[in-house]
Figure 1 (cartoon, rainbow, N blue to C red):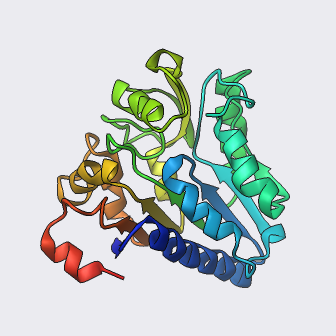
Figure 2 (tube, rainbow, N blue to C red):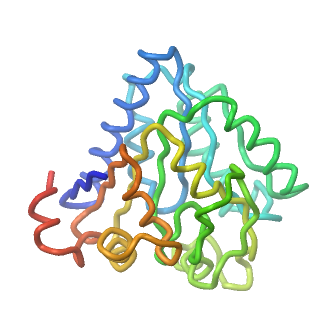
Length: 252
């Protein structure tokens, strides 16, 4: 795993987008197409804004999947991850081939159907973030590190749900769904490369826990340290609790 530390969230978004675009171009050049996983949430705003401005990517050759979605939430709700990806990625750059998780009708069927499509071929690059509680996708602690299913229905813990209120997606905790569909830990790790985007001081404790603490289910994103081709992008705010040696050795 490589950690790259940027001065602020703006430079982080630009640096991560450059690397993401390069990974997509590499996959297209080598295999004729690229299969990607896209993350959502407030932490991805600037990264996706810069990525969609990358005119060097042939987006018609990109197939997209996403990490997670709330169970029972309408696609019209501001917090819907389907809505988020349609507006901030798919429609913006004209991705023609994509598969979204529908948690409204039958979430178990969505897990099966999207899982079959996802596992039909390897994923070239996964874009992920880290939650304030260290979650990876919606795999809250203690995360399941063992299941081989590509997606599963999970129960969201209170810390995760409070984060969604804090980011402005919901007005009250009671409005936040208690269940979601999430890509599993092992499925994320099957991606050829992983690009993790983590700005903001709110994430500093989780960053320290996951990248300096023990690797284990209580710090779900710590598992990224076991993947041979993961790059983590931090800004000075999210990296502020890391040891000085990490800060000085990885700044860009």
